[in-house]
Each structure stands twice: as structure tokens, then as C-alpha cells.
Image (cartoon, rainbow, N blue to C red; front, side, top):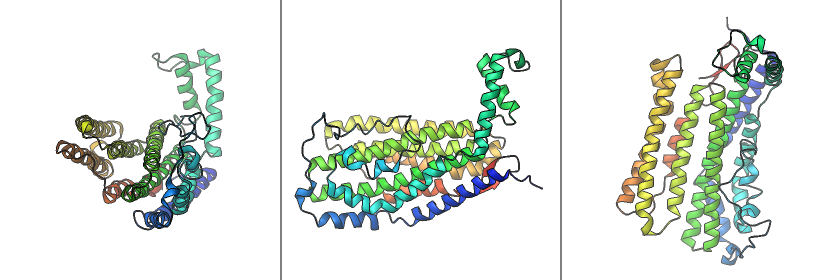
Length: 379
């Protein structure tokens, strides 16, 4: 008979599971590329062209546009939804009419984002107790190194003290239930941001076709780049959380998100360039992106097989949840490279291609199972 989890831990798990299911339902009903984008286009179409003019900003002003690539590592993980909602007018100096239309269209999905952030910041009493015990033992062992007998001589005193403190606390690493739900919450915020990018790109195309103010279109493209930057930043931090928890499945599924974000970032940069003189440079970058993605796919797969007890027996799961989604990203790099060789300046990644990656990634997203050894397994 499976060992029952501690009540407090099970309570946290049930709450996180329920919240993620609620978020998943809200995200699933968010009609990307149809309702949201059409709603914004309708609002924008009723406004005079002057509503999209942006006055020249004073670079010394506190409301001057910020560098969209800089998000401090010390900031909350995941980043706050206000960066994509309430704060974008001042942060990116966008026309008020455009900001209002955007907020109205994405309000619901940003509330779902906030719910996912709550799960991503899960830190139960169970884990706080473990951390306090480790800190107390670590301090004692550093002060009394004679207690470190039996620990590997290759460790420094600090490393040996930490290893022994974790062992004596009853668990060699952070209790995985909280860590895994934190990763699941981060994944959901990243999925939502990919959806926001799809809507934002529809708006960008609308602004281009209507010939609206060039500066407004440039600032909007900056905003899209900013969302992508936040994805890359949070995916990297999520990867670190998963690695710390030794959750190898979560590590490689996070790696897919990072690969997708890199490809979309390049595609966004490419879409902003109309200078044929840069074609060769972009062609070389596309080739480098392809090589990097192929190497990452092979490296992550080999690492997973090496570190997991299932090894090659787990290949079917690996194929469905990593190899195939990763290959779709690689195929995008191939497509970009060959089109650049033919002289195309820009190719749009279709909504269906993006959904395919997310669909494969999110398959079995909410399949949690208590293992009986203090961990919650993601099926």
C-alpha cells in the first residue's frame, strides 16, 4: 500500500493541482488569432490615425522607453503580469488607444497568468521547515568540521557540511512536491506569453497594413521582443529550479521552451528588417541557430538517458515529449535558412506551428501522481 503524504504537503498539492486546471481551462478558451486580435482590430479601426502618433520622448524622462532586453534576475520569477498589461504604456511609450485595446482583449488571460504565478511561487510550510533544518545543521557542521567524517574528501568544508546537513535533515534535496508545482506554474506562464505573442503579432500586421505611425509600430515590435526576452529569462530560471530538484523530465521539457523562444526571437528580429543587405548575416545566424538546436536536442536526450534510472526504456516518453517537439523547432530553423538563401527577408511562423509545439509540450500537463516516497510524480 502506497505511503500517504503528510497532510500539509497533500493540501498544497491539491490546491496547486486545482489552480492549474482552472488556469488551463481559461487558457484553452482564449481564442488566439480570432476573437482577441479581431476585437483589438475593431477598436483600432474606429480611431483616427492621429491616435497612433507618438510624440518624441525626452530620453532623460522617467517615462522614456526602457531597454526591452533587461529584466533583472532579482525580479520575481515569473515576471509580473503588469509588465504585459498595466505598465506597458509608460514602459514602452505606446499610444494610449493601442494600450487600451490590448488590455481589454487580454485581460482574462492575464488574470489566469496571475493564478499561475501563485502556483509558481509555492513555498509550503513543509519546505520552509526543511530549509530551516538544513541551514541549522550546515552552520553547526561548518563550525565543527570533525563531524564531517565519512563525507567525500574531495568536497570543501562548505560543500561537505551542506551535503551532510541535507542528508541528516531526512532528504538529500529540496522536497520535490513544491519544486515541481513551481515549475508547472512557470510553464503555464510561459505558455500564456506565447499566446500573447500570437495576438501581438496579429496586431503588428494590422498596424503595418493600415500604414500607422512608424514609431508606434517600432515600439510595438519592441514590446513583442520584450515578451520573448521575459520568456527566455524565466525559462532559464525554471531550468535551474528543475535541475536543483533533479527532475529530469522537467529539465528537458523546459529545454524545449527555451529552444522555441530562441527561434521566435530570431524570427521577430528578422521580421523587423527590410534591408536586403542583411540577408547574408541573417542566413548565417539561421544556420547557427539550426546547429545550436540540433546540438541541444542531442545533448539533452543523451543527458536524460544517462541520468534517469529508466534509461532507454523511457524512450517512448522521451520521443513524444522532447524529441518530436524539439525536431519541430529544428525544422523551423531549416525553413528560415532556406528561405533566406532564396532571398526572402521575412517568414511568419504560423499560429498552427506554435500551437503544435505547445500542444506537444502541454500533453499530460496535469497528470500528477503520488509516488509514496515523499515525491509527486508528473505522469
